[in-house]
Length: 339
Image 1: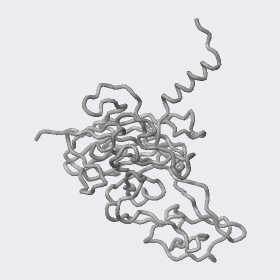
Image 2 (image 1 turned 60 degrees about the vertical axis):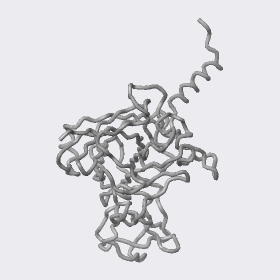
Image 3 (image 1 turned 90 degrees about the vertical axis):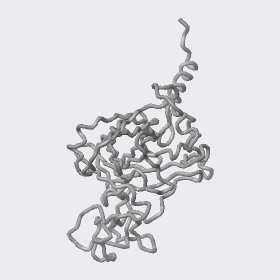
Image 4 (image 1 turned 135 degrees about the horizontal axis):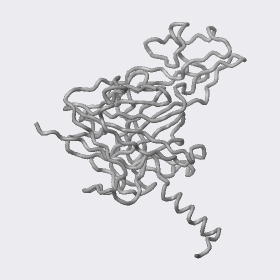
């Protein structure tokens, strides 16, 4: 048998790594699992079952047990601290005549909900912590418009070097054309008010749908201290709701005291299309998404029973955009029931 030299071993190693490497929010591997039609190659198939009645968003431990799901493997986004970590998110879906529901659950050793908390220092100044938040995101191809998203074009599909910083990847449809719909659930900034952020992707990058966000930065004009605090001195929640906030009074705080870095409220307009219920229990996040089949907004994917939709998932564990686990391509098929 031919001897494996160090050079040959290195080439084999690199080939294996490149085979499994994937870009932001997923890229499928080459090959096929028998899917027919335009988007032949795919990695996972999820069927959305038709149900006659709307689902109770908070029934995450009961109603969903009878629904079949798909375990989707997640792989790291090339960050050293995540290398070698393999995770799985389980996805389920049902739909009614009006709405679609996506159920997602995944393991997480810690509940991260204290994003950039304000902390008062001993000298009286304020600083922000390095804490982030847990998140999950779905990116949907709109109207089969992104050439290459479902055909495995590697980093050219959605991720490419930032023109301003070649060492950093950015997401856009620069090389695919078309648009993508992004559902972006955030444990600290959107979950407390029952929504997922609604965003989209075009050739220039990631943008937010029209309307007001569920969160805004809690800082004054100087940027060095909070702008608001809890109306009640007894409140210790990591979430500061706009309805329970009052102007910041520095004299009320001592060294080591904390305040949330974001003020939360229900979003408005197109940005309020996706309702959620997320709960952390026994080392798992479970999040249920609810959205109209057709919002009527151009930057949202329109769902129709009997049709299929390509998407990918990403999970963030107390991390920012550059640190996440992501899936390969997933196909969602909406069951059509004859009546």
